[in-house]
Length: 175
Image 1 (tube, rainbow, N blue to C red):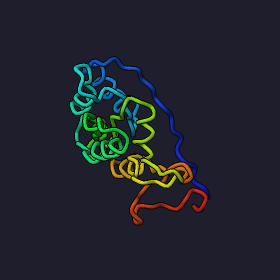
Image 2: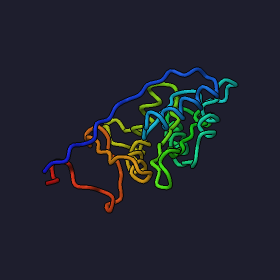
Image 3: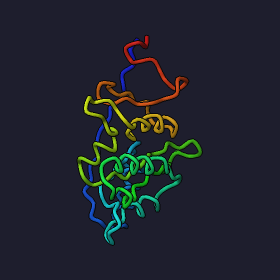
Image 4: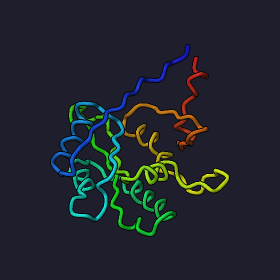
């Protein structure tokens, strides 16, 4: 019999550039809203008011430096000022889950919509061929590893990567 994909929902917050407010919102999204993926936008530059990375690191259990490294690498394909970016990604485990707690992946994205798209999808050539993988290619497998749901995507929109041993049969192939 077919197994239905779990329903998902989005949770949106508009938070001022104040570290305590950002920290509280991140904790609330993980602990109360039980979000497996939390994306922030903006607040990652060198300006005094840019405190999103500090707030994110303050609530973190594990740092995921590869995400920030890849975001800067992608952005450097477009602008030399990408070296000023301080995007980070972390894991925070739900405190109510015990020793096998489910984790949440928190990623600080850039503030500009064009930069967000480039970072998530990766740069493409004129024919639409991907030149460098975007960070979203690794997000579903990371969520698998921290106890979250198994996420599938429309491959025509975005290709994700999982090791062969972690790939489950497509929903329509399950009986």
